[in-house]
Length: 325
Image 1 (tube, rainbow, N blue to C red):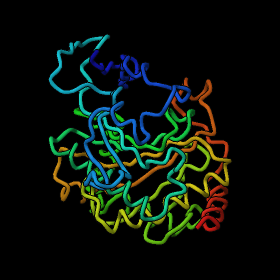
Image 2 (cartoon, rainbow, N blue to C red):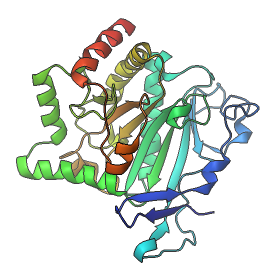
Image 3 (tube, rainbow, N blue to C red):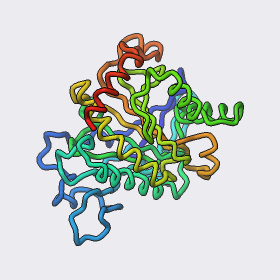
């Protein structure tokens, strides 16, 4: 059954109708398809670390068995008007981060985290090679964040058409560069460093909680390796993030009591050469803990209500992250 993109006639927003996602196994299912010895329960391996089969794998990637998008070239129907829809095509992968069912990323060594990040870059490169509009990498931790299986894993989705939210974000960044000759991410970093009160860490990677944070402890990591997309990320940039991410996740777990969260890599557009993208974009990471729920005002207006101030939460996380190193 092909996934459809349906357009909301009142808002112009896109919604994915992906019935196959309902077939995903839950955590109570017998056995774990991501554990060693269960490789036959998943689609064929696309990436294996190490490459040689003479050693046990440490990281493994394969097509998602219950994809959000459908392969390109299907027989989907396109319609316009009040009930506009079109096929949602691309590719969807799972990247299992460890053979250990309980080895969450926050407990990873720097070397283990670097293997995961390097594998994500490798798969982003492979997915970007056919020039989709975007490749999105993300990590759902906990059932409240959408994780159907607890075994530590990330996902990558190649989207043949970029949704309005991504297009709007890229348009703002490009417009800032056109107006100023500078990258928006650089000006934001300079402003956050000058203010100081929302900075969590700044040692090779700037970690801060954004001024207009949408949820408590929303946190951004910017590596500043001078590359635009995740597919073009430098070894130095990945290494800096690998040193920073596990203690940050441990700090968040300490402060918030091991919350569910969504980690998203803002990887940039992939249908443009990276040297052009890098003029106005820098790949970076955002973490949103799931500690609040949408209520009536949010649903009616789209305004997200944050019951905390990042100026108060950032110092708390900075202290917890420092203790976790």
